[in-house]
Length: 337
Image (cartoon, rainbow, N blue to C red):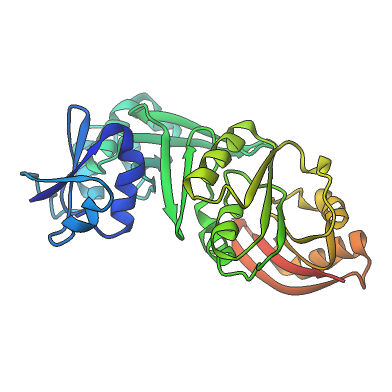
């Protein structure tokens, strides 16, 4: 079998790229030896790998069992108490070669073994447990490392590479479609302000694909800002994105063409600042959570209070994802009159 040889320090960046490009053969195991990993690739893709400055060698690997990973995991952990087995997660999230899963309290005494088995069966370098969602104004996740130690990875999505530490940064996989929508906007020669930039969720696709002249990306969380700066360089948009560390309410900007308000639950508190920064005719992409039965009523009430009932026009409203029972996360594209 043909194998791509990847140094360990490049694995979190390159392995997801090989997978996303359809080069890596997911039916065979990734091998580790010394400071390198050997990634099985499909025949005929050798030149694609070499173009990435990755060496290709011949070698042996082990075909993965035809049984599902869920079955293999359950078989290896079958000796655990029945109450633990019944609640083992059968779904998980991949972030590059890091796996994130949820475990119940009754699994805590066995967490190290559970993490190791999931890691080995899923070819993950690290397994983390989401033990508390996200909390606080800075939206920090509560994660516990069960297996491995490297918690930094790269997620390739919609042509953008996002580097971040899963124990420090929230990455909302449910917002994938909205991040993808941003790359298809026409922002030719626009000045765009991203008031809650995070690691560049929306700033990066806008800067890379839409023709924007400048994207001012403001982020208050120092950890997120650190990765925002890295991601700007990694995606080659340093000449377009201006990162700002601090509270967006301290921005001194006027006549922006477009504003991204990618926050939820408290977003309305920042709408007055958005009004100060945007020009007449500009567009606000406003994110918030509403009860499903009253989202339009609440949206209009918020904008009427901030801008007056004749000061805006709702262009589109889209449900991003379910947030809680009878509550959804929505995004509204609103033109300022």
